[in-house]
Image (cartoon, rainbow, N blue to C red):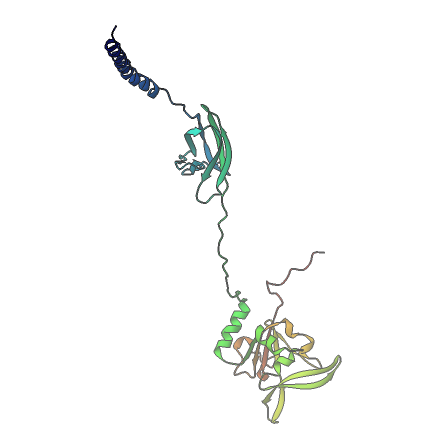
Length: 281
């Protein structure tokens, strides 16, 4: 065979090989493209959301941490999360008014994991409220305030008596115009006798004794006794002083007990409902 013939044969052989390669290469590439992809193993997560008393909770937001998609619990509190990656996952459950529920769960590929979720009610902080009010008055003190509003006489309530800081009851009476305290020696030492400076009778001026009312009951202080021996200023909750019959209300007038010389009405703590009950024996 001549040299030119051999060259021609070699060229044709190369051309044949190139043609065969052009046919086989698409088949090889097609076979590679159709190979199945390796899938990630997944499982399913299901369960129910309830309150501490066992009542199902609807509209709870459930998701796997790090994943945006979430589901809501139904009216029966149940939920289902599908296509959850196998392995350890963090389950989050949230609902307004309850403490967030976070729990580590282990999902097995191809299996369904049942989870029971109990949400604890979250305490709601409230702002403190200060309530101010006046204590209800005893009926006798309501009547006291009613008589005080009329303007006749002199009146002292418990707070006003406390501001005077009296050592004995008659220290309060020293503040009332027309009241005279006469020192007198008594069986229990020196006493202050309470009188009203009024002019009565045909003999002219004389110091007129007063009639006391204690908690609505008339009481005459006679002889060498003093009102200080019966009443302490700390026990008095209200005091009314009337210098004569023209000022004295009808309920405190008594012709038999000489109320025309003036009346002093004393209301004490005795019988108040706010008092501590006596100790049991």
